[in-house]
Structure formats: structure tokens, C-alpha cells
Length: 218
Image (cartoon, rainbow, N blue to C red; front, side):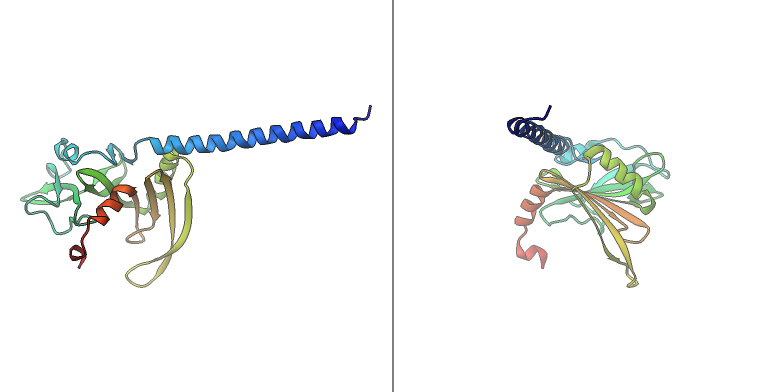
């Protein structure tokens, strides 16, 4: 039996309503996923953005391959020249290992196979920036780990990366924006054999930049 014009309109309206309902539900799920990702701690292993510098300074470190390890910061007496904070008002910290009578920069073990050269930057005594450099062959595994933690990236691009010799290579940039915090993966970075992951507290960094006087950057 043929449907009347009114029945056809009511059927179309019902289908439209269901479609809008599912579209709204999908949008809600996307929003909730973003909120959940932004709410979880952001950082490298147990080094979380917003944590106090006293927590880093007081932690016990396992010995390295050659000797004991320690935390060293840019405001320590005799801090090495390579330990430079992102802004003058901030404090940079990293790890050192004793080899013989000398202390040298030490990496952070990510797992049984991978290590990263890490620098922590503190603003107002709280962790605001983490820079981690590791072997470029780890890019796929690292990105997969970040997707598991934070969901799909919010930005992905390919751009030109130039090394000191002048040669240019494609560089992958993958970013997760998590409220006022972000995570950026660059592969390669520094050299063609290295990659980086950077964790930022954008609000804290903006405040540190605002506290920087013109004389501090001249």
C-alpha cells in the first residue's frame, strides 16, 4: 500500500532526526576524548609538566654504566655551559654521570632498548618544558605510544629540514594540543639520525617569556 504524503514526510523527518542524533553523539565523543586527553598528566615517563623542581632534585638515580648519576641544574654552582634554560627567568636541569674524575651528560632510559637526551626547564619552580632527543629510528614506536596516550594528533605536516651541510630532507611534524599543554614530535631533528619530542606548558612558557627583559636577550 502506497504511503501518503504525510507519512513520507514524517518518515523523512524521523530519519533526519536520527542522523542528527548520531552526528551530535559523534561530536560529543570527539569532545569528550579531547577533554580526557587534556585532563591526564602530560610528560615524559614520570616527569610531568607542572611538577616541582624539588621533586627532580631529590629523586634517587640508579647508577649509570660507568658510575653514579646525579641531577644538575643551571642555577647550581659550576653548572656546565651547555645547560641553558629556554628563558633567563627559568632553570634548566638534566642528568650527569661520573666517569673517572669527570661528570658528563647522561641520558634517560625510556625502555630496555631506547634512551633519550633530556633537558627539563622550570618556570617559577614548576616543570614547564621537556626536550627529549633520541635515535630517529624510534619515531614510529614513539608516535604509536603518544597516540595510545593522547589519541589522534591534532596537527600533522611535512616540511623541509636543512642540515649544516645545506642538504634538505623531509621532516615530519606531529602535534597534540591538550588544553594549555602540547606535545610535538619532529623526525628528524638536529641531525638526520635524531628525532625530538617536546612537551610544553604553553601558559607557563608565555609567562616566562613575558618576564624576560630586553637586556636579558641582548
